[in-house]
Length: 314
Length: 198
Image (spheres, rainbow over the protein chains, first blue to last red):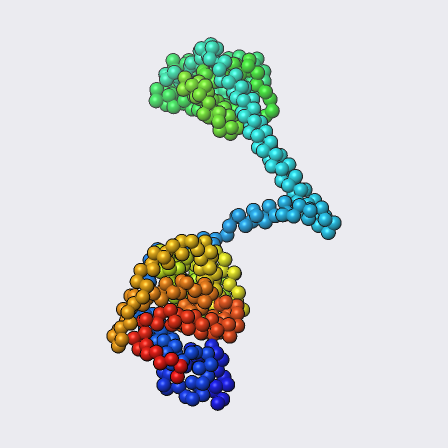
């Protein structure tokens, strides 16, 4: 009797699964008959329930292709990646709320102000950055042009007078004899080349120094005539002062580079002509100039005109 | 169980979903492995035994779960939640294809009645087709309740949670569905002996 009290009309399912109509207790049968017309209906329902279960057992389960799992897992992976779209959406929501009226509400007064101020700031900053980048590029190009012009002047002009002064330094040929004393003289030549830098400021002393060199050369020739030294030593000694000259000239060129003096065309012509007397000096000066120009801008090193001049022997 | 020793197969559905919400891919894979078969069969029974469509629905369901794992309500058992989602998807499919379904039912009307085979095994194929036909004539909620109960072996309580209704409602639906089907398919009862009221 207690069990029957637990029965609801819907609980007949349990009885259908467990017992046939004939197996029902009196109380159970009475309960069943309150909801079902009779034995036939009870048995039909019981039979159907059994067939459904049986059919379910017999049915082959449907399988899924592994590709579907792969697609789903890929979707999960893609969803786990940080997405800029979310960030952009939030920015969009900040700048432009869905409810336009919310932009002007008193309690949200700060929101549109902040949003539009941020927007304006972004625009201004963007324009300023673009302009700055453009100006920097243009000014860099102008600076290169400005530094390129004097380089051309210094390099292009001095080829003409070179032959003049070549005679001044011609005593260098091999048979030159230079006694120990003459080294000092050449040392003075080095001193003269120190004044060579000063010559850059004033062309006048160049001739004087050239005379000194000429005298030294004459002396060495005279000593050669005396035949005091053998030719081998003479050659070495003859080369030594010239090397010294190159070094001093290079250092002089460096000094000039560090100075603020602007070299005039005249000075340059004179200097270059003096330097051309040895050839090595010219190359050294040109090298210095090329290095100087290269340090200013790397694009000058790619200047075809300059390269052509250098290639032509400058 | 520690964080570094996750036995995904032994974890409860709800625990797995916690991990899924945190982005645990293996937990999501475990959930899929656990439910894809049942859900596929559910879709298959609910959607006119259309295999391809059932697979599409399964993929849609898990893709939605992958994209929005937070849509799961942790206060509910996962099984009832996922089946309620699946059921809603089926309802949407019904709404969109009422006409198609009606046409399909008519086309499948084939053998309307089968001679009762007293004492002999019922032709299971015929029974299956006929049962499907009769189920499709039912209200979608009644059909879903029947499928969940008798094919997915879900408890009355779980079905009630999945539908968001009382257990009494579920029992009532099941009883009257079974009664209706028995009446319509009585020719399949090999032991049909009509004695009238006992």
